[in-house]
Image (cartoon, rainbow, N blue to C red):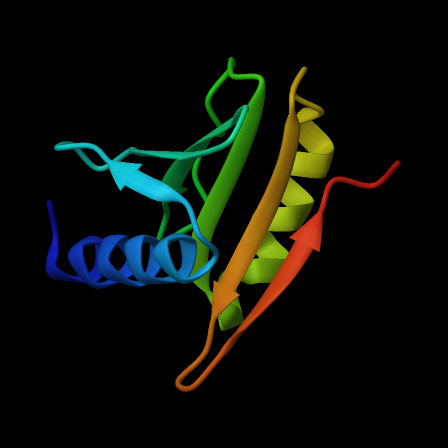
Length: 99
């Protein structure tokens, strides 16, 4: 795993833990659980081909890559609910799948 993805993975873990989720996972993909909800969290430094499955997914990227990743996901139109967290220096922004 690259240093960039390690940093994003740590950011993702921190964000979801702060939101009250229990976060687990040993690979690049994380599992965030809270009450009945399970979110598959994928740190992604560069827009890549989105995974083809998953009921609820969240991608974590740097804020400057958020627009590119959002366009790629919208274009791919995967069959799952998704959100993107764009990490900035001191905070983050969230983008959701258009309805």
